[in-house]
Image 1: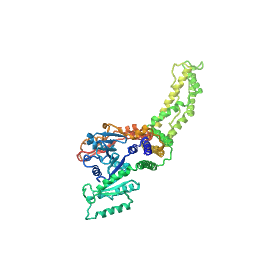
Image 2: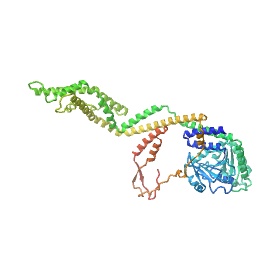
Image 3: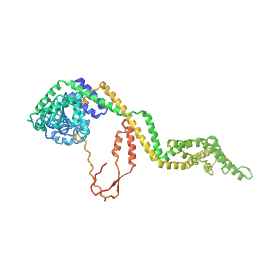
Image 4: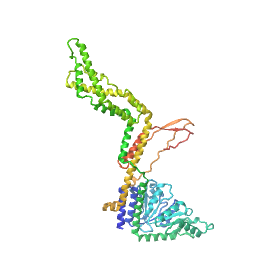
Length: 607
């Protein structure tokens, strides 16, 4: 058994480290079962087939209190021990219930997180190494419970499939029995409530033969079949006593094949996980793009969305460095500015006669030369960059080409950009020329902002009309790209898990790790999850018939934001969290209305 125990521990460690919590819980249960050399006998069937009544019959009158087995739990096990119960409150934690707390067991099991209940009985007729397992109905209306039942049945060394007389050949029963036979699982069939049979309508032996023929036709090959009645124990066809004896026979046979049973547990767990992994991989769509390509596209879409929603801010933010970095103030131009600045000084004069007119003309000449050079430098070193900037915006945002044809995109710079920067009374020096140059650069930047305003306004006007559709298209594509990233991340994760499953026997487990895997983690009862308390419905003010009373609705997204906080650092959910945050921001900006009309009566609220 040591080899099987180690293999099972290694496989359990794979599930545990992969955070496959449900698989890990079932594997830990299987590991405890193998370590303690237990024999599990399971009873399953559809709801009201009589499973709990049968278990009470096996255990003896008075051993169990009334309705001890909570039907809402996924698995209920019965074993020998001091009176008490243990409850798996989730996939990792358990609590213990003392004898005086057992009447609260059914209340605990109404909590949706409950996974398993273990009930200990001092007078248990099958021995300390035997565990009886009861399950919710395989036809449970709760899909999670039905699936949990099917997933848990592999723990049983022998399965008793129970059905009532009227539903023996139901589609679901036939399907499950065929599955048991195909898997080679040891199982027997129990047909209960045979007291409903009308001998006058159909002889009982004919009824039995017809069932056996139907089962053979469907390739259903149980180890044995039993016809019982738990209401009429003296029914002439009742095989309840033969069944009780057979249970002990099954237990004795199982004790002789402990290693084979352990091998089957490991093989079943491994095969099931491998199939589930492969099935998930097969269901995922093929993504031809690489993650880096998708991320680059998402970045571009993010930038485009920002431009569409805040065009003015983005335009001037990215245009400012273009103007600031334009090489306008070269050495030659600064010398021209020095000459012009010199002509503006009060002491500057030209000639001896008629010097006032000559001085003014010389000042105008130098100003004209400086302005002409200024515009030449703008045309050479700034205007092309601004035009290209506008062209890039039109191309990237897919704006109409007509927007580029505006004549006032960047007109000729006026002379005031230079003349208005002259400070009266300033002496001519290197520092004065430098400051004069800086003032002109600042004036140029302000002027470019002013003359760009009509073009920016025209783009904003266009985007106000067309921007919403653009944003919607971007968000749709972003969602698709986030789905691609999630799919690629899941594919990588599944591939890594598949590789770990393939090589699980190479895992090196320490003694402490082995003990940890075999040991249940118990918490105190006050750590039980509580059912969410439904908010008390508030009576809605009644309105007269057909009166248009519109009530605005507001939604609290705090829970969704909390989920984002929890998952945003997980590599598998990073892109999805970003998408969720994006959708939350969009949802918060929307307005929802509810029209209320009708006769006066209390109304229930639905979300």
